Length: 102
Image (cartoon, rainbow, N blue to C red; front, side, top):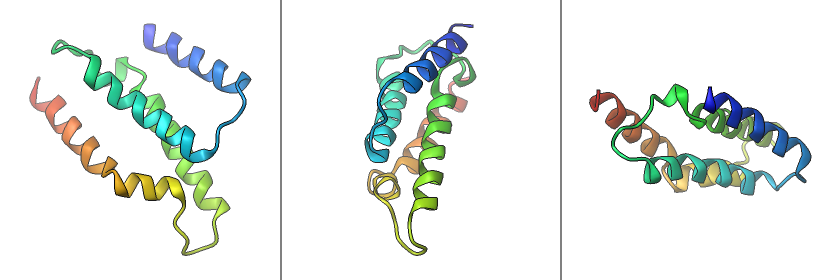
């Protein structure tokens, strides 16, 4: 229930706030995800009860938008950030740790 409220609130703020450049927005969503794991104690709620899925969806939307705006064969700054900071590997590690903690 709380995560739905925070998700709705986040979407409202995003609608009213001036838009950030894609890379800044992408980094914001990634930092929100990592912040959850840094700040949450050992008794974590299931990921589906958090705002992590919403942040991941926003990151995917940003990557998709960036891909549409680029010439074919070009890599945009958000994709470069994803690759350089090994976000997919980190998500895999966090997911694997979450599953093994149950």
